[in-house]
Image 1 (cartoon, rainbow, N blue to C red):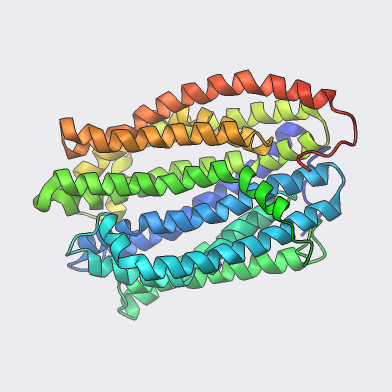
Image 2 (cartoon, helix red, strand yellow):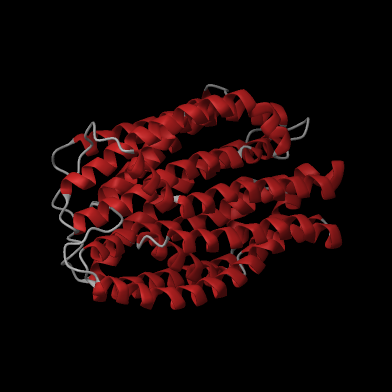
Length: 460
C-alpha cells in the first residue's frame, strides 16, 4: 500500500494533483457501471430503445442509493481527516466505526423500502406500460445489491481521506472492469436481457465492497475499522457534515424524476418514450462531466480538512486555489468536446437517427454552462470539507430547487424539449451565487481558525 500522501507536508500543488487525478479517474470509471449497462441494453435486438428507457427510469433509485453512501462517506471522511490533522488517531477510528454501522443500517432500510415500493416508484418516475416490465426487472436485482453498493462507495472515502488515493481508484476499477466483462455474457450469452445487466452490476459492486472492507481492516492503513465506541453525537455530526453532498445527489433523483415526468407528459403517447430514451443518453453523458468533477473536488477535501485540523491556513488557501484551477480546466475541455463531437457518444447507444439528432442537441444544450458549474462544485465541497455545513447545504438546495422548478415550468410554455434548458440556467446562476457566498465566508473562517488556541479540538 505504501505510506500514502503526507497531507500536512507534501507540496500543496503536487498533493492536490495526486489526490484529484485518481479520484477523478475513479468517478469516471464508476460512471461506466451505468453507461456500459445502457450501451449493451440499447443494443439489444428489436427492443433496445424501449429497454433503455426502462433502465433510465430506474436512474433515480440508483442515484438515491449512491446519495446515502455519499452522506456517510463524505460526511465522515472530512472528520477523520480533521482528527488525523489533530494527531488524534483514536478519535478518527471511533468516527470510522460509527460510519460502518450507519452504512449497514441504511443499506438494510433502503433494501426493504425500495423492494416493497419498486412498482409504484417506477410509475411515478416516468415508466409507461411499455417500459415498466424492463424497468422492474432491472430494479429488482439492483436493489438486492444495495448493501454492496453502499459499502463500496461509502467506505472508499475513508481510504481516500487517509491519502491512499490510488487504492481508492483501484476499488472502483475492480468493479468496473468486472462489470464490463460480465455485461455481454449475462445480457447476450445467457440471454438475460436487462436483468443480466443488473446482475453484472451487483456482482461487480460485491467485489469492490469486499476489497474496501479488507483494506480498512488491514493494519497497513493509518486508520482501521474497529468495533465499539458508538456515539449518537458522532453520528449526528457525520450526518451534518455529509448533508450537502447527500442533497446534491439525492435531489439529482428528483431532477431525473421531474425531467422524465415532464417529457412523458408533454411529449405525449407518441413521443414520450422516445424523449425519455434521449434524456437517458444525455444524462449518461452529463455524468461523464459531473462525476469526475465531483471526484476532483471531493477527492481533494482531505487536503483542506487535514490542514484545517492542523491549523495550517496557508496550505488551505493554496489547496482551494489549485482545486478550482483543475476544475475549471476540466470543465473547459469537456465543454469543447461536448459542442464539437457529441454524436460520437450518442452513436454508442443507438444508430437510430431520431435518437441521434435529439440526443446531440440535448447534450449541447445541457453542457452550455459547465464552467460556472466548476465554481459551484469547488466552493460547495470546499465549505463541506471545512465543516461549514449549513452554507454548503443551502447552496446545494438552492441550485437543485431552481432546477426542479424550471424543469417542471419551462415545458408548460415552450414544450417538452424546453426541460433541457433547466440545467444550463441553473449552472450559471448557482456558479455566481456560490462564488459570492464563498468569498464572503472563507476569509472570515480562516481568521477565526488562526485565532483559536493550539490543541483545541474542532467539532468535538
